[in-house]
Image (tube, rainbow, N blue to C red; front, side):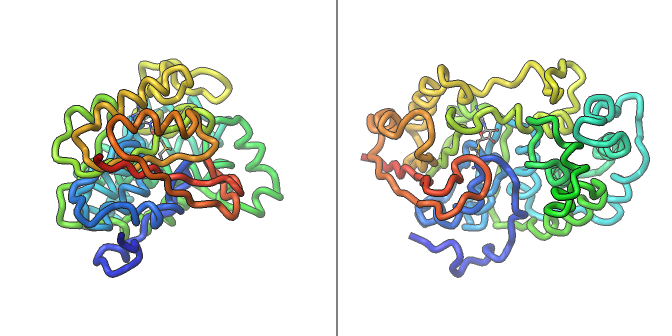
Length: 353
Ligand SMILES: C[S@@+](CC[C@H](N)C(=O)[O-])C[C@H]1O[C@@H](n2cnc3c(N)ncnc32)[C@H](O)[C@@H]1O
């Protein structure tokens, strides 16, 4: 077993702290202990904020990461796959130029004005988005999108978009006192965050890749993976990521062929997850394990508030692998899925029989 924070050239790089439901950022050192030295190619199948995939890259592994949400894939492209490209001040000048096509780029203003942002801030997001394609490199584009998405979550109370109180909260002096980001312009937040993202870009001398697929479609196509980390949404927690982060997905995808529904203006139809409804989750977890038989080691994150219960999970894995349960008990709540004080974070270590 290895200590994440011990002698490796890449461990000095810092992953910009995410604010993402269920992120395992604070558990990544613990998870790293269960990734054996001998595993060369590793997969983070539900990458989310990419904090675990980035840790795998820091361990010097060939890292494959995946998430079915496009905005998460851009973080993966920018910080996991990208070996060297950063954003310069010339690039930010391009991004901050005026809207290059206001007829097309007006979605944020038309949907989210007076809901999550003032008109001015929403229009700024549109003009920024209109200029992303002017950057001459796909990794630059992914970095720009990743940093702007993070800026938008900083500006909204609770860091997600499944509520309609953003502007009320941003007018509340007590909340502003606790979190000044609520009233800071997106441009300022972007410029503050960018150096952290630029500094997080590094080359671990491996061909790392970020995918944007349903895990059930991706698994059958991958070969030569030594270890997979599964951190699926579990139904008793915040399983519906598309309701929480729809605004980021709309910003990145710039949907023109969707409807925008409910008070939050979430896009519709949603992508198919297969893991966000109780009635589908068990079948799809079972299918996921069946499709992973060629990958020797599986690490499965789990929490004692998750659905299905732990015995059901073990019973699904045991036909294929020996399962050992490792626990880490929380001392204090910290926001996000599963981080309730007294509950424990669980890792199922699944090794060949
Ligand atoms: C618990 S989060 C992962 C958090 C991640 N480990 C981190 O540290 O940020 C689960 C992720 O699964 C993604 N997801 C949900 N259904 C998926 C599917 N069918 N295929 C791939 N990703 C999916 C969600 O978008 C979400 O980011």
